Length: 222
Image (tube, rainbow, N blue to C red; front, side, top):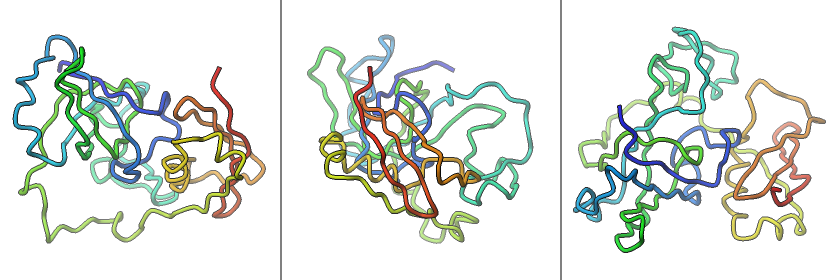
């Protein structure tokens, strides 16, 4: 396997990254090709498509012994399912799959071609192993979605003061959507605990009680 590109997003670490692609459309990422694959001809015709499949490596995962079952966060982290019935990052081969929307394709900059996408669920610097266009046959009208259909994502109410909203600046909308998806382990219920994550060059601090997430501080990263 060769790394053909890397994607650069607002997440320097995996805590806080949405659990699936497409959950937060406001999140953008830039795909920059590695030099051996940096050819404008390689993306010719891609402008005719709206979405992409990204095949990538779970590069942030530490090696773990194979387990045939995992605990999906969507099920509260308490019920075990077969690893191949989930999107768990802990797999025999650390391959990720994401469907993202093409925002633009830059063919004129020094690093061209650069593909800007939205809805990405990847840590900044994640190795991209392949890119494929999303085509009509990928859409199945009669698809059944297993436990993900029975247990929809639970949205959390986000409270953020006007003062802290101003500190978030242009990333406020995306930040709120990220926090609405409750970016903490599903099994953790500690109302007094202050969680922290880095996002868009800011250090975000927050706490969660029941289904209410309150942002307690936003500061610039050192």
